[in-house]
Image (cartoon, rainbow, N blue to C red):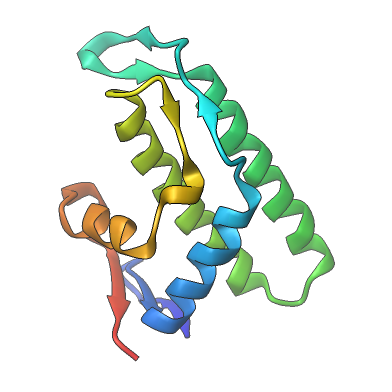
Length: 126
């Protein structure tokens, strides 16, 4: 089960989280060339090829959502997709190619647990 509480916390059961991760990763390409990088203010980095791939996945999720009666599933799929993007962005800071297919759910859980700005996401053991 997945839900938002009154504090805008995102609460997802581990079983649903694993399904979401699996479904979202299937939408990403196997490998992305991220050699083109632009350094922005505050040591942030813009990576056009990674953003383009993330946008395509998001478009697919939103298009499929319109045809489906599982609104909540696609809403949380977008959350997981953002986590995947963030993890790939971190990897792209150190590498010229990233491989979404190498990501596992534990990588995303580590990202959630070690990022203050993701403190509103809770994965509950089933």
